[in-house]
Length: 324
Ligand SMILES: NC(=O)c1ccc[n+]([C@@H]2O[C@H](COP(=O)([O-])OP(=O)(O)OC[C@H]3O[C@@H](n4cnc5c(N)ncnc54)[C@H](OP(=O)(O)O)[C@@H]3O)[C@@H](O)[C@H]2O)c1
Image (cartoon, rainbow, N blue to C red; front, top):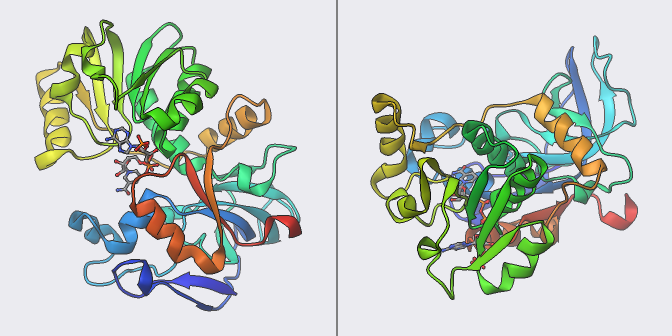
């Protein structure tokens, strides 16, 4: 099968599209023919092993696993023994184990892993949204976000931001979305109750207070956002922050019992993928697709993701859409 291989760490130029052995499903596994995948910030981070501390996980000197790719959508090509849940031909989507393997024509994964039947009526490229949604949901669950809560999402135009906005509305919260001018309409279309243009107005000075503030792009800080929080309000960020301040503040908040800053780690969760499938089918959650690239141009997709300017997701069509 064709796969995108990185045998060392480095920029997108090192990616090599070549033939490698197609994996065989073992007992309890399914083999999926990948139709669509994405390049996300997790892939971009793993490609360069940046920040450096990811190396104990990705491989100290060179990558332990040489095919990246977290989000996938495709069809079940073969099933291993003991697989009851899926059958050949089923349309499925989800996240690969450990975040590896979807940048290829086929991927094998446990049938009881983070994989679900695709929402009916959707095309493959419309459902490769799990990475951002999974991260976003981790934060919203940590907040215990419920109906009636007020949340401000800073950077509501990225993969995590657009997902956090839509999921917050599903959970019944009132959402203020902070985005640049070009993404104001997008945020409104996704259901934001109020939008703030951070290029035009200092969002930390708006005269409202929130139960939760989520920095969905890692570009602001707890100290800047503190005036926006209610006395019991909680802040979360998707990035470490300068000098790892978000991690340090989260540990401090936990030790002192204030809970003002949280920094949760996403964990694989099959039930969330099933929940997402249902919400996509109902039309309550939709993919925000910035660009699509054919597999052969995946290095360009990485270059674009590295600009940190994408809105929503960047799709890789492994099988061209008109052939699906
Ligand atoms: N290390 C990892 O493995 C990993 C994995 C996933 C996510 N993350 C972290 O999670 C965060 C979000 O990831 P993502 O994939 O959702 O991001 P993303 O999709 O790359 O976010 C890009 C969006 O952020 C907006 N943006 C850029 N600069 C901004 C600023 N100064 N203020 C507000 N918005 C700004 C851009 O729109 P405008 O410029 O038009 O505003 C763009 O729409 C990042 O901090 C990333 O590092 C890390």
